[in-house]
Image 1 (cartoon, rainbow, N blue to C red):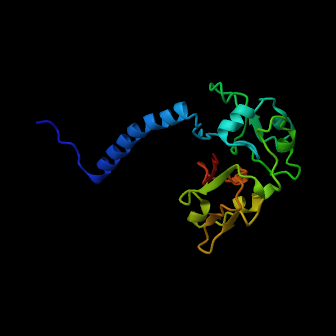
Image 2 (cartoon, rainbow, N blue to C red; image 1 turned 60 degrees about the vertical axis):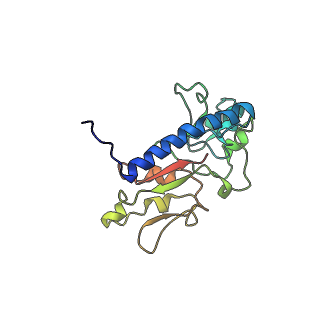
Image 3 (cartoon, helix red, strand yellow; image 1 turned 135 degrees about the horizontal axis):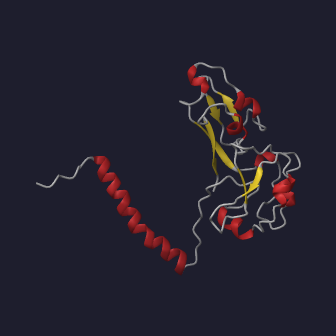
Length: 197
């Protein structure tokens, strides 16, 4: 006898999600092709401060390297991957170097194309958002690690230690610079940056 399908709620939910995805893909394609409504492109890398939404950023960026050259922290690099649309565009890898949210906001001023647009003040930057994996954090092992809090260029309006003794990210203050990820001493990192779209 053929093996019976597992009919648990988990499998029904997965089947429902798959069915909904298959149903919505043609609708999304129709909207994009017929109505010429560009759908957002998900951002997979951390872009420099002032980056426009990914679709606009990719269309505007000249791949000139000006932002790479002027970055005082040497945090901005050029992508050299197989994706021809992204190749040569600037990005930040917080495992290698973090944005220091410099006073001069040099990368935005050096951008000739408008792919990086100046903001009014450093705290208006929205590159990404830090996420903490509490189970990996040294504080969960009763170690008094405060490196991410101490190294944050924004300060206590972005990251703090809450009354329970855990690292807490304050979304309204976090700019996604990556300093916390860069300095985090754990492997894998207990704190990482998720790029904003």
